[in-house]
Length: 104
Figure 1 (cartoon, rainbow, N blue to C red):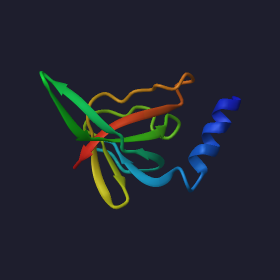
Figure 2 (spheres, rainbow, N blue to C red; figure 1 turned 90 degrees about the vertical axis):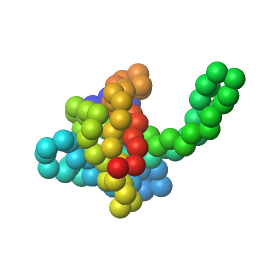
Figure 3 (cartoon, rainbow, N blue to C red; figure 1 turned 180 degrees about the horizontal axis):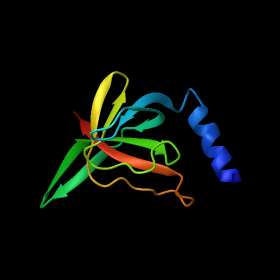
């Protein structure tokens, strides 16, 4: 394992950063995962108007969820979310999926 991979494992193990959750692929059994929740506000331009939108993103390790897909579900803090849009791997080593979700 690379140094970056070991650092990711430490990050996801930290109780102050990551939390337990469930990943539920469509039509399959739930998988326990560690999630990092992020809730950035997003400002969307629409013509002359700017719309403020709350968003929810979850980071999950590729080693725990190798192929997330839109329509899959995430359970976090007793709330259910649906993955919307294509999951992205933005980190240079491609070790973490970023999931854009909506309440579901």
